[in-house]
Length: 328
Image (cartoon, rainbow, N blue to C red):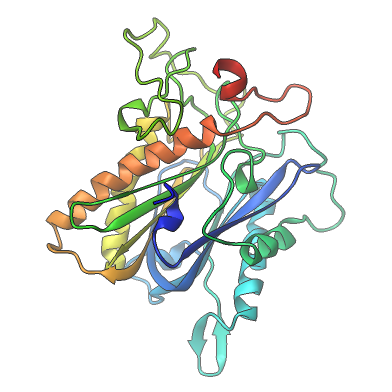
């Protein structure tokens, strides 16, 4: 176990970013089509192809998921991932035609620093292609890919990942691009809200504070509520229907309020994709799914904290400090 989403067999992750741009793309690529659904809680989402993930819609399998910076400009990233998947002969078959199915979501990092004065077209399509092409089982955490320009209230954000197994031996993993309006730490101190769920000191091992600081429950947010969003992907090797994937995404969303305070604000675009590779049958369709969803929420909370813990500050005036700069 690498403590990464790629502990689920058949899942690969790739990043592509531009340090001068201070933005990037993360692609979650599946070796074979997977059943997937989505749950959107943020009030200001930016998405592509999420409507087809409704359990009532026709298409069952998707080929990849694109997470991108760049706000609405970053929706182009899914086209780049799609282009790579098409070169591999992947996609939904309609007679001799094949259309790769690549849902995507974006976060706002246009004010994170860097040079955003691109020419006619933004660079996210090519970044999406490069992210998919470079996908593997090992990948960078922190300030990379879609997390390069990410931030939270008071601290640099980033890409985090974690994994776990159920008592039945079903594996579940999460990857999150953390660009939240709220804070991942308790008050102004170093302790993560997600501390009760931490495994093996994966985000510093500080635990919870012995006493909560006076400012613990004062909602701390960024200077603007328009600059946010946490994007997450949950993947399991369980055999699930599309409706069960949707329920998994709904339960996994609980991981966000375990790790971020406040969360799901009017202009966050918080979203959780859930996908299943279908390798292991649930022992019980209700009880096993309940356990899977509970653990998915824990794993996502850990991934969020880990993304902030591993992040590094950007080299621009006024950039957010990293957790390690401030507390390490």
